[in-house]
Every structure is written in C-alpha cells, then in structure tokens.
Amino acid sequence: MGIGISILNDLQNRAVLLLGGANILIVVHLLAAASNKYMEHLPEKPKDLATKASRQAARSMHMPYVDARLRLDSFWMLAMVVSLATVLKLVLPTDLADQLIAAWFVGQGFALQPYIQSYISGMTTRNNAGLWDDMYSQATLTYEGNTYVLADPGLFTLRLCTTENKNTYRVVPWTAVQYCVITRTS
Image (tube, rainbow, N blue to C red; front, top):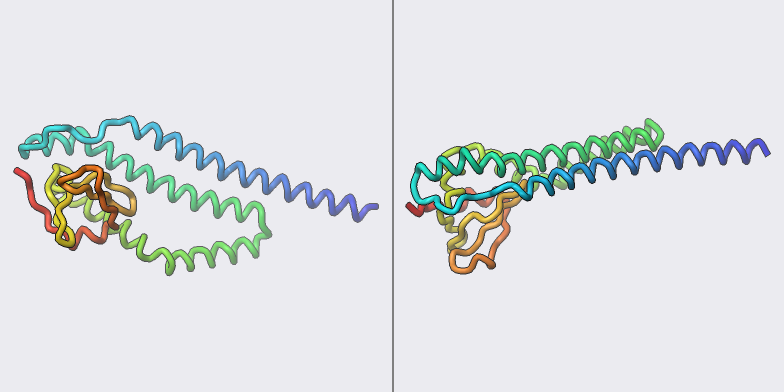
C-alpha cells in the first residue's frame, strides 16, 4: 500500500510540474501573439516616397515600427527558446535535461544554419541605412531577371511583390539581397 501511494505521489508531482511547464510555454506564446497583434495596427509605409526628403521622413516616422516589429520577433524567438529550456529543466531530471538542451543547441547549430545566416544577413541589410532606405522607398529590385518591390520584411525572409501585379509575390531569404540589383525610382 505504501509503495502505491509513493508512486501516485511521484506521478502527481510530475503531472503538476508538466502542467506548470505547459502553462509557462502557453503564457509566453500568448504574450508574443498579443504583442504582435498590437504591432499589426501600427502604420507601415507612407504613400508618397518620391523625394529623398520624403524617404528620410519615412524612415524617421515609419521605419521604427518595422524595426520594432522585427526586434519584437527576435525577442519572442529568444524568449521561447529560453522558456522551453527552463521547462525542460523543470520537468525532466537534471542530467537528462542538460543532455537534451546540449544536444538541442548542437543540432540547431547544424540544422538551422541557413536560417541563422538569413537572420544575420537581414540584420546587416536593415542596419545599412543607405541600402535599407532605398529598398523601403519602393526602389525596384531585380532578382533572377524579374523586377520586384519590397513588400514585407520579415525576421528570416523578405517578400518581394512584382511591379505589374501586387498580388504576385516571391518570398526569399535575406541572403538573396546580395544577388539583387537595386534601382532607385527617383
């Protein structure tokens, strides 16, 4: 009888830890979704970007919102990784959790290498003021023989719309910017 109560007590403790860990992940995910929903309602681009002064005004007035969206996505990506590692340490035995976390980060280093390169390339492009101002001011980007305009920058990718039809677009990693020819419209 004592062994059964001990096993039930251990199971109950593990279930409480598992439920607590799941709640931590859910709260982090809900906070990320709420902040992204808030950022969706901020303005993105002004309509008139014909002159250099209006491009600079666009950067000073509207670019912080785009930059804030990307920084917020970076923060929530990091917060999710940290919270998942915390939950693993909370729920699993310490040795097993340490081994899983170490293997997870080594695996990420190899498996996510193209995404990490794209993320770093995107940070570099967005921090190059001249290049980013030109891309954001509806300059045309020629990529693989087709002409596009920047539609939506993301954390790992950017969306390029065709100049003829705004509903036709192409999603490329940030590393593809090095192969683009950027032409100013003004």
